[in-house]
Length: 452
Image 1 (cartoon, rainbow, N blue to C red):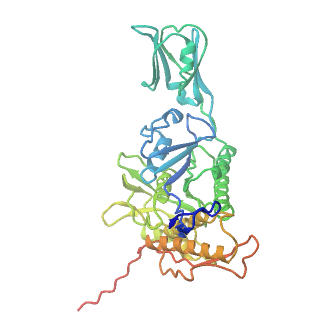
Image 2: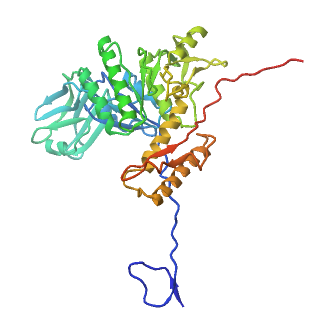
Image 3: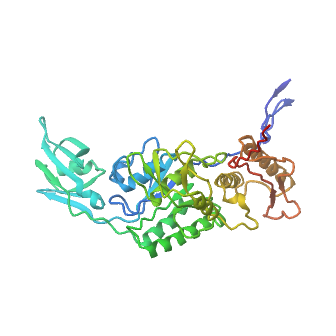
């Protein structure tokens, strides 16, 4: 007797019994990857304006030619990246504006820095006779070689190398040049419009937490107030209108009172003696928030590399700060610098947002669950029919189980906590009723000891 599988359209010629095996299990796409911090490099002295530059923890200096500095250099903007990388997997940076490009000319050769800013003034070009043929061209930055080309004959050959630091131009044979230093590079001035444009463009890329350091030495008090208002509106829009569950970290903001904003109100001293400002600390906090899973709280997490606190709070000040929705650092019993309480700035509790919404771990559960729904329930994937509803409910129960198994939620009732509202769902509209009870960390421990 014939057998095997069959194609329902082509059929079979011979009589027989044909069997197809098909899985009815609905795959769960999963949960969006966490660990990405976004930072605007306000006041940076080199690099392409208006471009998102992605750096990874495994190769932080891969974009050296765009930033003009190593992440390990003594530079205020690089410090932000280093602090974020203490917890983040990926840091995306953005340079709001660039100034004038440094340049130099010698004989037939013209050299212009690839990007604007004063850092370009540290670039130098040397053209030396090659012992065999042609010339060797060296590009150095701050006395360190960043590009080297061997045995070139003409300016056109040098131009064809497409150097990542300098745009060369000219015609004819290369000539020996001892050294030419580029000069006249000037920093740009980042305006409110430039930074607001960054906030608008940030909608187009994927990130978890924004560090928003607004240096009062660069920006006026009025500018900082306007930009803080803008970032709160942007985060509210992203979370509540665009379905993008992002957060931002600010410093010493006056009453943000929103779960998507973390407000840092003191800072730390690093082991090298560097006293950070609250604005600089936003980078570490953003990394800690983005890098934490939805089953982890950052309460009492140690600030790696910190040895002291700038603006340590007394007990009374700490209580008041927590009630005002402030994120700050304190000393543990072991004398380490730790996060006092992993909370956001929400301080007004009313329906539908109770006190649980101020806890960042809980919010990470809510945000991760919402992102999982976005991934698994795109438009036009399921039929809006009883059969489609059954499939969607099955998928929803699988998501609930995934969160329960990882310790993100508790008391999940798989028969009741993810249901299609069949009385309201019709045409192209489907309504769901979902129950979710997040697990928080044990952060307030009360012991009653009866002595005998």
